[in-house]
Length: 134
Image (cartoon, rainbow, N blue to C red; front, side, top):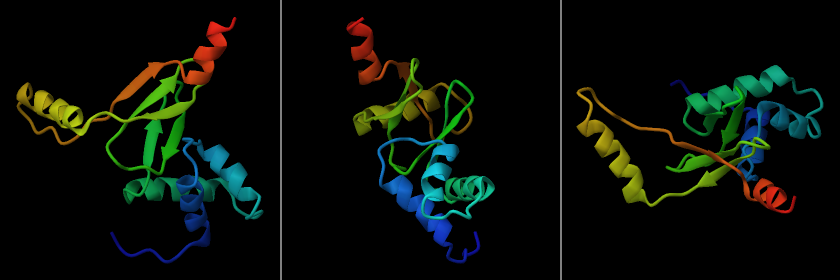
């Protein structure tokens, strides 16, 4: 991939994502950046998010409701998507479990298994507590 010229807006997007444990939508990133960059467009945010995904600098997380969330943490980890509020949270599994999933999949498939993506579905802590108090 050719070297990209520096972009303050792209760096601001990376900085925002690096500074949050949330998994924001493009609209959320746009709303946050608009405070410091009033002339930024939603299209610029989308283009830069997709570029960062293509460069492997962030992760794109499709959700069951058709939405897309973004994650700065590109390490091997899984996500839980709350079925009530839509929140996306990290779940860390032991690395041996992660690698064994690839190995098991490869043992049952004649092609080449290179990677996987795991999403869990349930209730986040907040929604679970809310449900238990009702």
